[in-house]
Structures are given as structure tokens and as C-alpha cells.
Length: 231
Image (cartoon, rainbow, N blue to C red; front, side, top):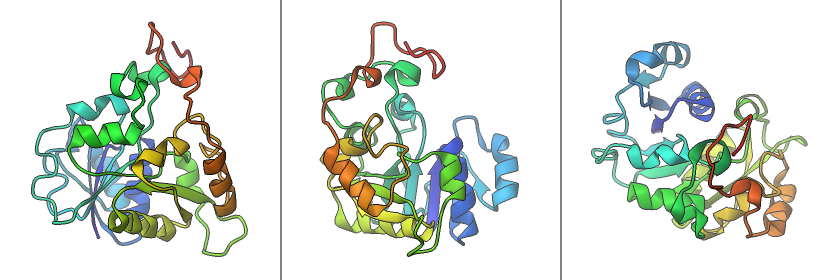
């Protein structure tokens, strides 16, 4: 599959390495330009491209950048992508630590619905509830007793099936987490977030999630601070 990775941070870099190792044709971009991605490209075999070009010909694109930076992505980001492009959002809203106040999310939109509105494309939410080093190292064969499961939420069943297949190929069980309106169940602060549960545990955690966003995950007048000192 031709895959574009938009963002080369912890999750983006990990997906670049792992998906390239599985034989996918991966292109990667960040906000600083392809010249800053030479080491990642050499290590993984992926192709570093300018962000304006990274999705050309792509069948699947992963947007994995800070939530507050999504509106800064270039217009026409997905021009030239393959018909039926699947877009994955891995992002999380960290208002007190990094993103500051995003009004649409604060008044009740799910994080990925807000991202979808910024991109003008349907998205599937996945890979947002696992640490990057666990995504890199903890994949296991199907049926292994310690195999971790990841929730996948989206409105388009075909797109969601594609993403679920990708999750499975990386060594994790994919759990259908419902529509994008249900994706609040896997946002930060919920029982499934960074807990490395198996498939049954993920289903239980999704069912136990509380729709009320706790104060730890809401902006304050002083936001943002930092991950070390949230504001």
C-alpha cells in the first residue's frame, strides 16, 4: 500500500519504521522539510517529501501532528491522492500541556470530528491510545496471550476495515470502537487510554468511559503550559 505519514514525531516516526518494514511504500513529511528527515528515511527506507507532496498517490494518509497545528496544514494537502484515500487521525487534545484552548472541542466536539472538519475529509481515529515505544516493540502474533488491542473508530466502514487490517498487521488486535461520534471513548483520560488492554479489556473500557471531560483535560485561562507543568 502507498502510505503517507504527515508528522515525524514519536508516533509518526514509529509508524514510518514499522510500516516500511512490512513492505509498504511509505512517504513521510514534517513541518521542517525533508532535509530534516534524512536519518529517518535512511533508517526506514521511507521517502522524505515536502508536506505539500507527501500524499500524492497515497492510498492511506496518517495525520500525526499536535492537535493545535492541524489548521496550519496546507490547503490541497490531499490533492493527487488515490481515489478512496483513507485518512487516519492519531491525535489527542492536550489543552493544558501543549495545544491551548480549541473552542470546538471544548464545547463538545470529539477530537477527531474537529480534525475531520479542519481537513475537509472523513477520518478514522486510531493509534492515539498507545505509547510510541509500545507501538514499536509490543506487537505480537495473532492469538498470543499478551497481544494488545487498539480501538478504531470511524464512520466509513470500508475505511475502518482498512485501518483495522493495518493494526492487525502490526501485531495488535483491532477493536471496532464505533462511529467517530463514539471516539470520545478513546480520548485522553478514558479507561482505554495508554492501558495496553487485550480485546476484551478494550471493549469493557470503552463501555465504561464517561463522556464528561475531566478538568485535567480541559483548557484553563492560563493554557497551555507544558507536559511537565500543565497550565
